[in-house]
Amino acid sequence: MLSSLRNNLRHWQFFLLLLVPILATAILLWLLGKNSPAASENNLDVVKDSTLLAPPPAHRRETKTVEPVSDTMPSQTAEQSPTAVSDELDSQIHIIQLQRAEDYWRMMDWASANGFRITGQIPRLFTIRLALSDEEYRRLHHDSGLEFTEETEVFVSIPDQLLDKYPEWIGNPGPAFGTSYQDYLGVDTADTERGHGIIIALLDTALLPHSEFDNASLTKVARRNNGEPAATGTSDHGTAVASILTSLSNASILAYEVLGGETDSGSAFDLANAIVDAVDRGADIISMSLGTYSDSAILQNAIDYALEKQVIVVAAAGNNGVEEVCYPAAYDGVLAVGAIDANGNVSGFSNSGEEISLVAPGVGLLAATYDDEYAYFSGTSAAVPCVSAVLANYLAENPNADILDAYMALLQNCNDTEAPGKDTLSGFGILDAERLAAQTATGIRDAAAAGITLEGNTLTVSAQNTGTVLLEQLVLTTKINGIELQNTFDDVAPGTVVSAQGEVPEELLNGALPLAIRTTVFTPGVTDTRPRNQSHIQTFGEH
Figure 1 (cartoon, one colour):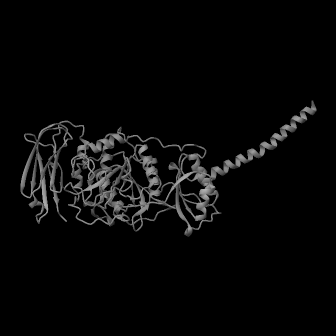
Figure 2: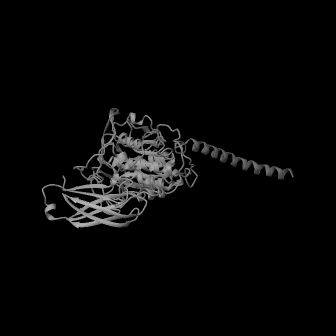
Figure 3: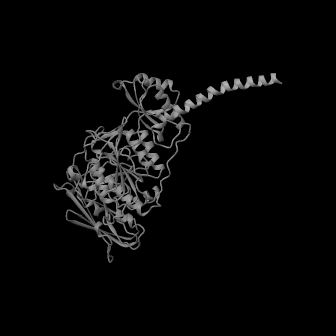
């Protein structure tokens, strides 16, 4: 019996000898993992052994306020290992995306353990930015043991600086709005509650101090560059955009500095990181008066992340006057915004394409600038905040509206311009805040002069019922250099666009003066509820 007991004790001693180092190793690994840069530097709800990143709560359309935040985004960089051998002068930027969360964390650990310089990371998108020498790049592909996709760094900038593919547009943009854009859009500026409780994330250059923002709810979120806050920018672009937002809506603004330097540019990676951060901070709308002609999978993934979380994305179409919409405006689900002048015509600088969603005031808007002054601001950059602000006001009034509801309401209540119906210049038409706000009202009788186009010598003129009741009769009058024509349309339903076509005489087309065409509408026997949109003028042949 004692012999049996001794044998049992020997077995237990042997078992304990094995168990102690195993427990010690496990505790050590736990402590190392808890304090490793990959596990500790991001203030996100993530764990290494999870197959999915913990998503933030789904966005709901409800009144809320901006939570207090620091003036910087969560750090994008991991600490460099003391054994790192990367020489910054010989390194190149590589952006890689893993397929799963567990692969992302494995790559983070592997890269850190091998002394690779991690210059940015977006855990939500399983994306890492690395500065690698040629040898490190070879090791990444051959030794990491992980599958990933990669892309070169893409740069974004304000639309005026998108000159890498097309030259700068030169021409007459059309008459300026000044301060009249507020009335033109039909925004009730006396309503101090407009946009209240909605958060707009503004991704642009740094904001300059200005009295325009004294009463605004504004939180600045500075860009991070290799772990350091970016130097304060000197461009007034973001300041001008923000002032249009605050003039049209009292929504709260999260202002991200994603562009800077002499060219007002930044990387698509940092832009994607700001988009994700804005979504996670509770933004309802992301407003981007910027772009690039280079596609970026990382940027598209960030846009998709925002759309999945029911966040509306608005972006500039571009200012080169070409038939190509820049990114991110060109991505599916993004509201791509073009610009019109004070006559309601699409400006020559505004890019066109199938992706265009709508147009808004974008020529000569009076906006905030340096030294607490104001200046005229033009471009699709100026049109974007008009759309973002009007959407914020709509969401504040319709807290249960989801992203599809908002898109449909916005586009169905645009005023037709250019070619009848949706077209590549103006999309669904001109933004109209008053019409959007009154879409469910009854008894609104409103006939509007719409687009005027000239193809060769074929003239097309249009009108639209922008009210909420049937118009039994709508009369459209066209004047061409003193010649007057008239068309009558019966039983025009709400939202319907009606058109007339004719041939312009050759002597008018070949005349020395520009061809000025004006249309007006009226409804016989009926008082028009909104007479401000009853006339339209377009000039052809003007240089």
